[in-house]
Image (cartoon, rainbow, N blue to C red):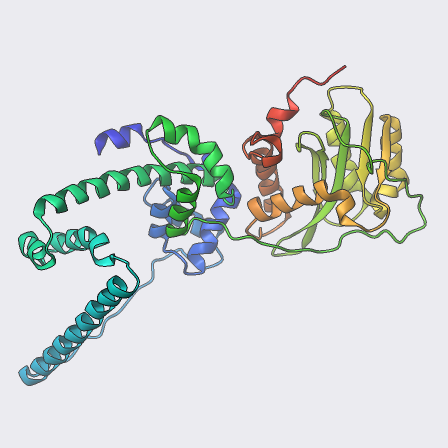
Length: 405
């Protein structure tokens, strides 16, 4: 045990993203977990770490522990106690009869030897509580003590392996709370092999399901584009063209970010080849200034002067004179969808969905807190989250590859 503590990684508050902290606070305040259960479930270090987050970020008053009072029950008579014990004994006998009948039906009609499969776990728990003798239990079920100990050894060995699996999963979920199981398995497969842990993708799905660690899909959609305006719309240049290198095609889009005070709007510029977010800005309204700042940020990160196409929907902000002037000054060719069709800007929509459904999963209090969450989330998205379309590499890994000249 001491060796495990020495080998464990020490974490500080900086290792936990704001989105992760808010997710834990939300689960505790909804009653899904107590703060102690949350610390154990996610492997959070420190006795009062989650309690500190609740006091700082929670919506409830966590300043003082709740006080509980118990009324002193009146003493019951011996006859009443005997009657209550007789009733409890009859209830237990009936319950045991139901359990025995259930096991018999499962074994005879469904071919499920359930009793033997859970026998060792059952006896282990009862022995820990001092409620049953091993020899008697084995005799009642017709199982040898040697067979019991062998089965218990295999179970303990597997439990230790699964404990390591859960620890590795939680390490990644701290940074990527809604990362899918397929990507988790790809990221952790080498670690499992190095530790001689045998677990396949389907087994990982089953284990995470039993530990309530599978992520549920979230779908939401809100229209943020106003394409009914008199400004000039540019043709769609991507109908028969796909990106073949970094900084060849950028896609842009706007998505809403709800806070507890008001709705803000996030502008993103994404490289179509590497899926890397190269520019972003969160603003209070749908004015052109916000999308322009995202584009200017992307231009500053640009490392080549090769031909570049900027693709977006036909929103008022992208058609504005201010936005078009920035593109013209930086020799960027403008491309737009043929109308309000989200499938013609599918990559930008996909990136929006990843950020909102995998990172920004808890509503921030205000825009200041939202900016912090977005900055941390985009850094994790670019540098840590693998993409299936990128052969399970991160956007930054693909983007760093040499750009042809």
